[in-house]
Amino acid sequence: MKEKILKAIYDTYNHSKELFDDADFLLQAGKKERAYTFFHFSFEESGRFFILLKVLFEYLQGNIEAKNLNYKYIKTNGYENHIKKLEEATLKMMIIPVWNAIMNGDKEAEKFILNFYKSLKSNIDKYNDNKNHSIYLSYINNDFKLPKDLITDDDLHEIKELAEIQIINLEKLFKWEAFPKPMRT
Image (cartoon, rainbow, N blue to C red; front, side):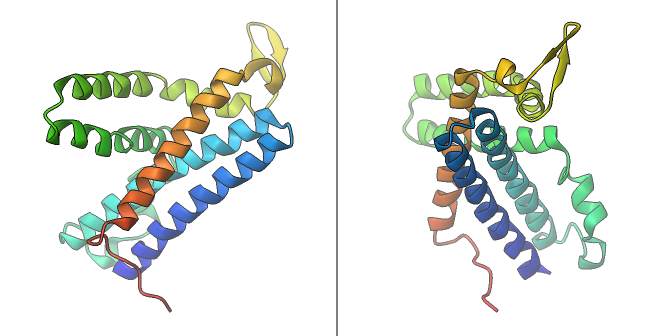
């Protein structure tokens, strides 16, 4: 069971990178709104990565038996919940920066990072709404709006940065020697 979860963690990481690459392709093709969608999906998928990592830790600690580790269990932990995945991605992207600030005794950086986190967290509903606005015709204030009317360059830049930062963070985790590697079959 451990190997199955590890493989899912690695697959989620790789999928997050693929979604990011697809978003870059769409952006280069002038499809800003669809690029937003895929950058968002990449960031959200990184939240799924951390949900699966939590499930792995629960299993390794003996808090869940293999027979109870099923789709219903991972779904209960937020595997399909868009807001939960965004919350996990947002929180976990702060681990390395806040850790570095604490270890360096940099109170100013620590305070900045925590305020930045609060700001990101307060925008989670906006990110989720923008994901929907980037792919669907929306009805807002008694009017129909196309994705191009709602997704700004600033929105695109922000979600792209979040997805990119998270991919870098995940890569750092994998470079850590102690991080478990799935067995190759």
